[in-house]
Length: 192
Ligand SMILES: Nc1nc2c(c(=O)[nH]1)N(C=O)[C@@H](CNc1ccc(C(=O)N[C@@H](CCC(=O)O)C(=O)O)cc1)CN2
Ligand SMILES: Nc1ncnc2c1ncn2[C@@H]1O[C@H](COP(=O)(O)OP(=O)(O)OP(=O)(O)O)[C@@H](O)[C@H]1O
Image (cartoon, rainbow, N blue to C red; front, top):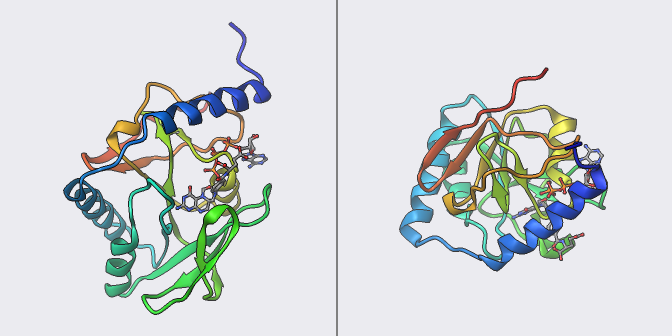
């Protein structure tokens, strides 16, 4: 069978987004805490000084306690500001004292200065063992990872793992994914 077209992939992704929303999941607070602990361990194992996290949207793992922990060890937390569709995200400095401003699609961002991360934490609705992910459909993280070329760590629930995420030419696979069950080193396919 021929490889599906980009527009077909967009359609496949759209229906998968709907499916993932139908089997809406949450973690127990103990599991969420476990996930944050694995994520913090993985972050601290890297030399990155400026770490881009996310402020949670409904149903996502809450990284706010992790933002505080990262800030407490003296590393700079950045949070994304959602730009117009078709553009990479921009990141702003966050500290525990930051005021949060409403942005696009119900997101919140700090009013701190714009800065460039050297490690990016990436949310998803679904992921597979190859490190491919399904997001909210803005293409924001793929554009951002392509523009910045810095290491990235995906995070989410183990129940969000599926056999295979439909992928298009712009999808950037993640080498590391953290869930409440631990740290996964993915099987990024080797280039031909
Ligand atoms: N916590 C968090 N912050 C984040 C993201 C995220 O996934 N999680 N993002 C990750 O990129 C960016 C925001 N991206 C988003 C993109 C679209 C929608 C959204 O609600 N879209 C509409 C329409 C989608 C469509 O065009 O089909 C919707 O779902 O109704 C939300 C966030 C940056 N900040
Ligand atoms: N680097 C890029 N350059 C041009 N188009 C892109 C790029 N990255 C993604 N796109 C396009 O943006 C659209 C949305 O991409 P996709 O469905 O992969 O978003 P997503 O990964 O679910 O969202 P997000 O990254 O915001 O969480 C697709 O049509 C895709 O082809």
